[in-house]
Amino acid sequence: MDKEIKILAIESSCDETAAAVVKNGREICSNIISSQIELHTLYGGVVPEIASRKHMEKIDQVVSAALKEAGETIQGMDAIAVTYGPGLVGALLVGVAHAKAYAWAAGKPLVGVNHIEGHIAANFLQYPELTPPFLCLVVSGGHTHLVRVLDYGETEILGRSRDDAAGEAFDKVARAIGLGYPGGPKIERAAKDGDAKAIAFPRPGFSDAPFDFSFSGLKSAVLNYLNECKMKGLSYSQADVAASFQAAVTDILTERAELALSETGEKRLALAGGVASNSAIRSSLQAMCEAKGADFYVPAPILCTDNAAMIGAAGYYEYRKGNRAALNLNAVPGLKIGERG
Ligand code: KG4
Ligand code: ZN
Image 1: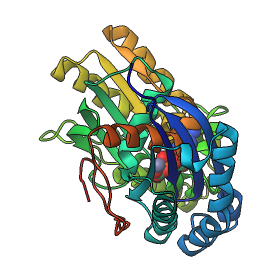
Image 2: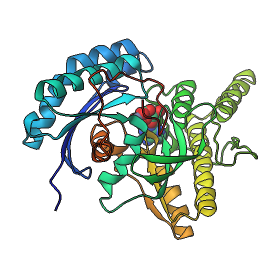
Image 3: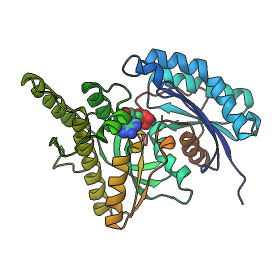
Image 4: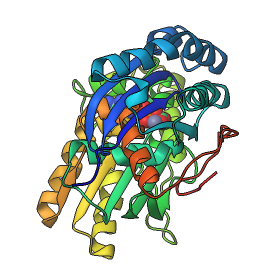
């Protein structure tokens, strides 16, 4: 049996300061998340400068808590993994600078991890038996990608959003109907009391690129609907707008994923990213996969939102491949999926 590999992982790309200890890329020894959501709610969205300052305040505590909960010390780690992109530059830099300092001080190798690949790797924690290849739909606040995971850290992009990410659309629509930040969970809650068929919002697509997404058209349709109501002096139902919008996003995602399963012949579909917490989207994809005889994988909600355990999982496979970051590792805010910075 191979030696056990333990990784201390750090994540600070947006508004969660997180650290985790992960064993062999599959087992969570600890997963500490300090969320700044309440703070940013006051401003209606993430304020980058505040995010960086809060990361600075919390990061050492969060790392210590992750090691303590795992019953480990930094000397017991085989490597330090850190998200170096994509994300907010100032926020990323806090995690990167601290990871470099820990790695240097403890004499441990440093591994840079792509945040989006971290989201995909959350599935390896939830399903220790899951191995590539499989299809993965990554839906977060900043990214919407339909990919084929060929191997660990190796993806082929089938489709992507040409404009807003799915989570971004949830956040913008939530703001427009007065639900505020964070939009996704608030729309999901409001939608429970609404009629998903009340308003026929469009399900935009591209005939030349059937796996690509466009969410800004859908968002504009919602804004137009709200404007029309206002101009006619009519009131609208927040719950019906939320439910009808959520149904449109769900249909778009389900339809693309179904087509991808058919066209690629893959029999496994995984879901990843913050939007993957949405129960309407989860059940729709689950039902579609069942009908097609495919297996559906989705991490528990705590592993869908930003966390460091997923970075430890992705970091493990980078470590196994011998990928090491130098101590001049920099934050790459626009890092693309599959890109090595
Ligand atoms: O993956 P994530 O935590 O951060 C990024 O890497 O972007 O995703 C955050 C996004 C936000 O846009 C948030 O509104 C959305 O995920 N989200 C949801 C739900 N929970 C979070 N969207 C729909 N339904 C949810 N329950
Ligand atoms: Zn994320």
